[in-house]
Image (cartoon, rainbow, N blue to C red; front, side, top):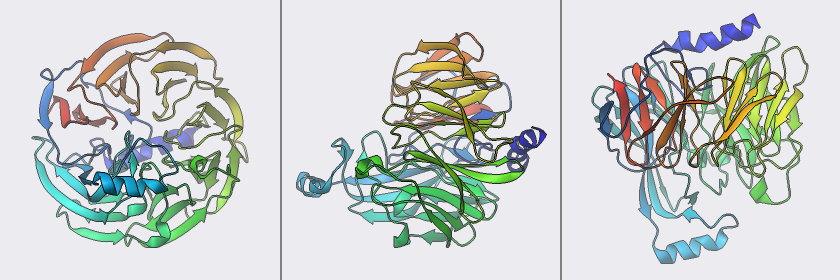
Length: 434
């Protein structure tokens, strides 16, 4: 397991201790290594600054210690007549937002003041696909690396900008990457080696794609090979992949409808695939790894956590499964315990090696954002804008409950120094000391 521990350390060394470069942090597992983070706050207590951002978006903040980046969408609603006409083609859920046009933008923010330093239009679309009302047009979280910021807006396109100047270095709006998301874009990208990798799992086509990060040109595109349900609404997915080293080789672990896949990240060649064993689609949660294992959620309809043992195996083998898993929040691993908050607020702690239940308690609220582990504490935020802080352990110990502005936490926390960047539906906050 020494190589696995080293792998988890490498991203922190590359990005530096003061960076949070992608969704769920340097190791994509929601862990921050420092101590001294705040555990109590409200709309006036422990607030360094509050910044009301233009537009709307659910992407989480990322930063390199010097600047903060988030995405947003400036929305122009469709008229009632246009909405009615366009929704004639809607074969999915009726609870959607329909726009006449949308401007997809990158916001560069000063971490000391919260001031928007640059507001950059990346893409502009007329009559964009509708999105679910729990989603936004700017939900995928960008990635910052080596002075560049990489953006993915689902089928609408991809881009890279210079983090210092804000200059757009490349854009990719290739029609070959068009899919019907149904509920809007949701998957965040990852940067690995010289590639930008992301999912495009629509109701019409399902692929995983890599672009060359220096040019934006397609490096490889791999069609999902697993047999799917006949209903197109059960074929879509919104999960985010990870790259992990198992048995001495990098593996791209990718959750899609009904199947989890392993790919060679260099080529996109499929190494293996495993069926969940029951219906699983509209995947949102990102998998995590540890102890030579993979932990993932099957998401909709009846969500379960599946734990696969991979280290020492040619192909991952199911070790255990857990019911009442999350549809949207990602699991989080702390030591030998795995913590899972499902959308309805049931918080579960199990032994990560065996799946044995330590405890299961109902929390107040409904949850969409993924949890964070920082300074020895776990942070869970809900759609009512309340963050419950607990101490990890084999019994539940609630440290505090904190509320900001009463609007939903759809984005995940981004630790910065001894503070958190917290995006609500109303604003971006820096909680704690500068």
